[in-house]
Length: 339
Ligand SMILES: Nc1ncnc2c1ncn2[C@@H]1O[C@H](COP(=O)(O)OP(=O)(O)O)[C@@H](O)[C@H]1O
Ligand SMILES: [Mg+2]
Image (cartoon, rainbow, N blue to C red; front, side, top):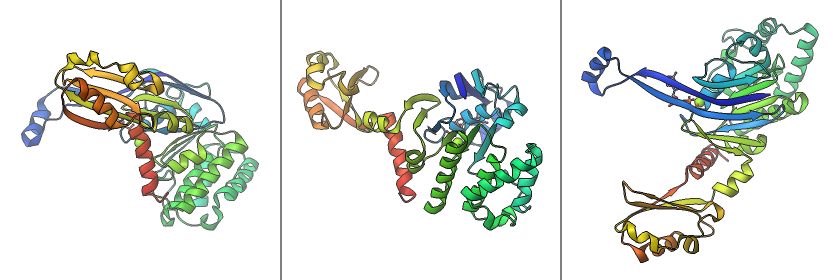
């Protein structure tokens, strides 16, 4: 259904200089900075999959979604959605997709909700009999009838979210893009939204791409997650596998005095380098020796004492690996919102 091949997106903006003087300097300078928001990402998604598209703030999630919906042109690479190049055939593509951005509504603020749906029916050319069957179904799963006559501006956030989801689904799109659909919602509404997404996916085989910080969304909906960090794809697989493989990883960086002595460390025997993704690295500029390991197999003091036997250690930092950090972030957001 979706085929993304080596897409990148660069944003070019004028270089900024600090302070007021800098602002003036900036006005007269032609210097540009290039920000690579999405960096050579490839994946394909089958019909009917629900995929979580995960990453920290600024990772490039929304930019990828905008390229898949045709709002942005990729700097490099190609993207096809239901066989169509979304950017070159935006009209054609619009019939196939539904989009919800959690932070803003696409409904008419002052109109009663029901009228928004009637307008969308015209825009998308939904035949009358399909329209009423569709409204019945959406009423059923999203419980819209309670507020269908009220102007959108009077709806609560949760009601508005259900209304937006309904609006995105009215024309029965093949692909549904949801960017932070449950942000700020209470548990009851979240649950309702998740159930609706699940039912729509089961009934119509709708393909769903979902960005979220909510671990509950991921656990309940996504059979697969794709993680991006600084524009690069760093994981594509199941949540369970991610937790097993990366959730327990730690990285310890030691600034050492006698790097040449590292060869006295028998890495394989001491740490089991290569097992469970355990690896070591030496960074010359900072004289840092780093060991990445599974915290259930090896403990920090073991690593430290083994290294201290061969060289003096000036400084120690214990970090989590990028993925572990991201997983933790996802979980923290989940907890912060009451899970
Ligand atoms: N129109 C733009 N112009 C310049 N930089 C942008 C633009 N849109 C996004 N960016 C930058 O690209 C990066 C990725 O942004 P985004 O895709 O919105 O991240 P996410 O949705 O994962 O939080 C960020 O560093 C952001 O500042
Ligand atoms: Mg975003």
